[in-house]
Length: 340
Image 1 (cartoon, one colour):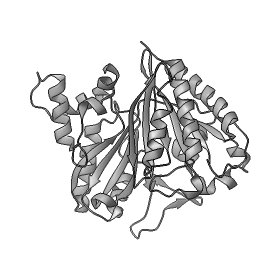
Image 2: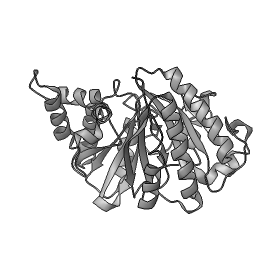
Image 3: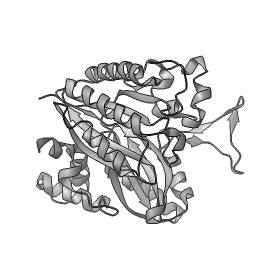
């Protein structure tokens, strides 16, 4: 059986009617299954996870995107998370018996069809990127929705699909193919986001601007010098989580085999300790592969003969994954979800 995942991120984190409509939009589409729908009110964003074969995942992605386009209006949107549009990003991910090339082709077909049907600019990123400066999602998002109208007038940022015409209701869509991304947030026991932001800058692969002993930005030939971050395949930023009186280091782990969950967690703990603040658990947004959980379980477990379920339980405990909301294995681990 071929399994491809699609993880659309929509710019709506509060409206339950919209969430119900998104779920309903794929109910009658064959060969695709809704695995999770996880809204966040502070981010004002919902992460949806679909899985299916090639035809099912493409048809499901198009259907749920068209529903979101009907119901979400970027002219009224505010939230903590960076975003370019109502349907912010739609990645296709090979999970089982599927290749990255197949997912690249699916993203291109999705982009071509949805740009025509919705009259919206579409950009390709990651493995589907057509230009080097479009591989990284954060580069495409630079300026966000508010800067998109001006950005579209720059020939360098003409979309890969659709016209360079600003759609004020929908903004733009980013689609592409990538390795399984784990959206992972580590909780900082402080309401001041400066600590989380500093930790993110120290750890993220892209690093931060270098400053001298007086705090002045170091420049060479008029260009700011950057210090690389400590962890590869780690994208991070600091955000507030007002409903819990916490802040978070919000992380995207783009290759959990290079930087595993437990490494990210322990490094955040180390940097937090240097700043005099405490880490109190973490959370996974969306789904996570079983292997990523087993890696953490093996790291923390002293029982070398522990079975998979025991290792998962150790990982949940040591990473504090139930600190904000219960981590339910059958609903969070993609391997378990697909078997149901």
